[in-house]
Image 1 (spheres, rainbow, N blue to C red):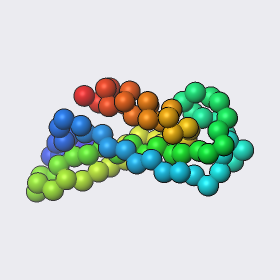
Image 2 (image 1 turned 180 degrees about the horizontal axis):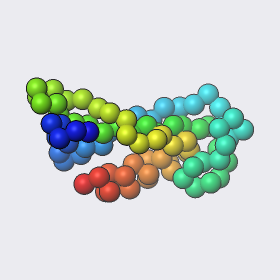
Image 3 (image 1 turned 180 degrees about the vertical axis):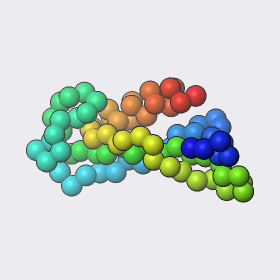
Length: 84
């Protein structure tokens, strides 16, 4: 993000949670807890910001994580706390 873009407050991070077509046999263990999962999800964090013209947009500065839905939900709370 350059100096002409400002972060959105109070929650600059947004997340997309998508179900994958496979489990740990295809994607490996949960990246949060390290255990196997029958169904894997991918969490994609997005940084929300306001452009100089006033429109809101997102960028993808962080890598996504694979894991259980419940583990990834707890991970979003941790990332929000760090971003504030």
